[in-house]
Image (cartoon, rainbow, N blue to C red; front, top):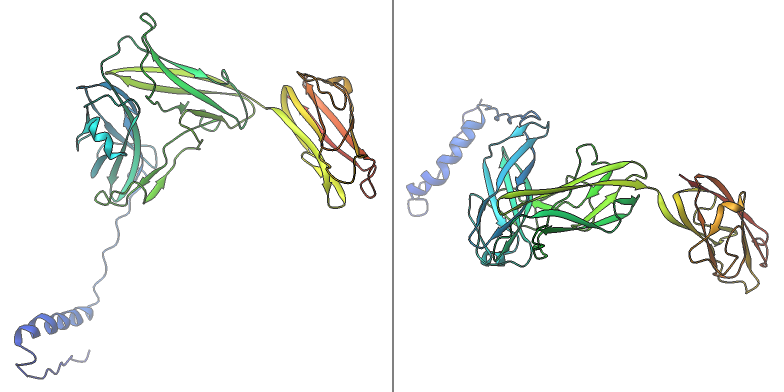
Length: 386
């Protein structure tokens, strides 16, 4: 390697020796070091058993009185499912800073009730290990005094039987069955599907933003963590499958005592469908044309004439391969007859039928009273009840 020579003009007025030491000598050292060919340090690799996959904070729901304290415990799980109990750092943050008037939250995760909250207080918890951050959220509520002998129950909008794709809204109630005292509304719980039911029922889970480092906390930036299928409401449980069952569990730490409850859901096919046919280009088409719709026993099907132009003479008739299976709706339809075949529906008219018995039913629709090429066109489909 050729020697490196630096020619420096010796003008003390312009280049004092102190400046030469500061600027020139480091450059010489850097260039000399570059010739050695040092290798960069290889990054440390971690196995799935070591990488932080998720954290859980408990209790996830807490009810305390003014003056009470509750500690929030953090446990972790690796990508491989093994337990993680130690972290590089953990931070507890009130989602709404104004809630500091209602609770005092220490750096170590101890909550103290200051004043009645009249609603849920949300705490975001961030844990970091080996450069990986994960988050969870817990709910607190502060009451003026303690309530004793509490039990947890649900008020369900579907009474436990939910059609696929629909959401049941559960309202939790904490009450004393002897004194009939009830905790005021405002506390929240998190619903959790059974270990084998997470693909059958979806529940709400907080959409959390994990800051890249513990020092740069910002609740609205970073990596969004959503480990479960989502629904749009805290109280919702959504049916993901048309058949089968699923357990949904919840619990709350009420003044130091864990109170819990569970609900067994039964899932069914949808109980309503609309078959609406209209003009699409040069053909008659629409919802479920040349398709199969599967529904639960007792389902209601609305048959509609969606043609809104070409005069008032247009008529649409739906006939069934088993007309006796198409019984009257409650209340009965006035257009197209109340049961059996749906006859002569006028423009934008509809008529409903119920199908009570499991089986496969073919329907055929015919249009008349309009110009070609749509006049006398035939469209068909299938209804399966199971």
